Image 1: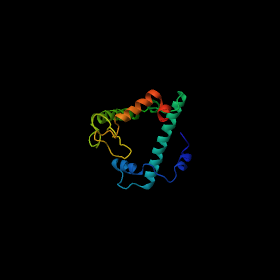
Image 2: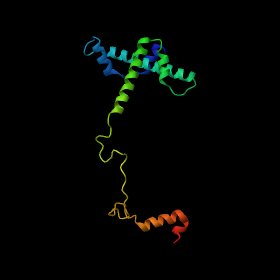
Image 3: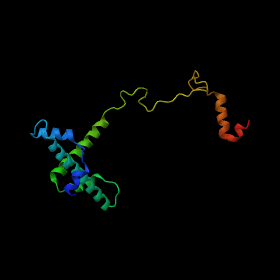
Image 4: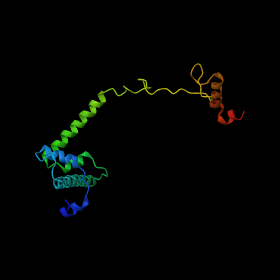
Length: 161
């Protein structure tokens, strides 16, 4: 851990978890409006814990030859604290359950213009912007023949006409 004197100046003037800590202190029996010094000190402790935990997880990932920090790195950092590790495992399990529950809901409801079979087909328009009677925007037999000439003869020959 870093030196306590160095920590105090690192986050001077900014509180990251003020509202949450006020609520937490009140829930644990403190006054409805706790002292600002108490909130400031609790915020410094909380912020330093998070920073130190992230640095330790990063160090563990580096020692294992990875550049990215994974969940296992955080589990390794807190593995000595059974309560913290248990809470972390519980929260990760709840996250998986929530993901599975979200997959069960039909997300297509409320989306206008999409058919259940997949994305909506785009309608082609001819040069004037309007569609033919059959909705294909002027792709008649002669247009199809030009397409076949392009395929058979190549674009250089068909455009030379």
